[in-house]
Each structure stands twice: as structure tokens, then as C-alpha cells.
Image 1: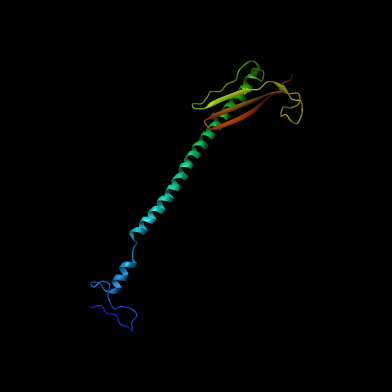
Image 2: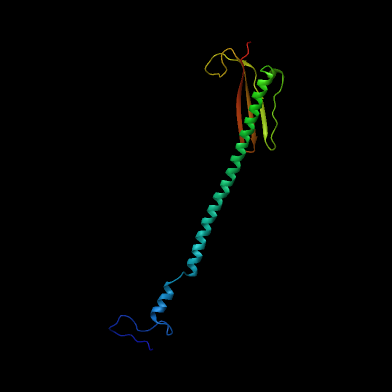
Length: 160
């Protein structure tokens, strides 16, 4: 079919493809995605997944630190319970002449500091009751950046 334009019509009567009618050509161009659009979508998804992966990496490190912190707290509590059992079984005076120690858990550092003997004065600034002998014991368990500390007050309620 020859290509001719009429003065009255604003469109040309030329077909774009001689093998396909005009409607089929328009349909083929309007359906589907171009390769450029697919590449752009893949880049956007890739950048988003990189951000999500870094969030998961931070979460994993935080969970590991929280687990270590929890373990340190449990070891400190276990040592404090041993301290109180020793106080109950051997008496308050045992701490004056003996050194108290707990087993150090693998991979952790454990410190037990038994403070010196003092007598409560009844002042509100101290937790030791008036006229009672007391010792403050500080138990610290640590590993890398995680640590836990417990302070236990031992009081001698026996008559002086």
C-alpha cells in the first residue's frame, strides 16, 4: 500500500510495518518491560537488600553482646549465692581470716573484693544498721565489652 497523506486528514495513512496492522504494532510496544526498566528495578532491589543485610549484621552482633551480658550476670549471681551460703554455713567471722573466691568461668574474668569490716552508725548514708558489723563484697564478672557487678552486704547479727 503506498504511503500518502491527505490534506484534510491530520494523520498519515502510512502503516509503520507493512506486515502488521497498526493496532498490533501499538499493542506490542505498550505491553511488557524494557531491558532498561528491569535493570533499574534490579539496582533498586540490590541497594535495598544491602541495607537490610547490614541491619541483620548489626542485630547479630547485638544479640551476641546481650548473650554475653546475660551470662556474666548469671555467673555473678551464682558467686553471690555461694558467698551467702558460705556466710550461712561458716559464719560471719570466717571472712576475717579467709579469702573467699568463686570458680572463674571459661572465657570470663571474675573478681571478688571483700571489703573491710565496719560498724553501722545509724546514719542514713550507710546501709549497715546501727551497731552491726558489716562487710561489703563486690563481685564483678566480665568478658570483652560485657560486664556485670553485684555488691552484697554481709551483716553480723550475732551479739558483739
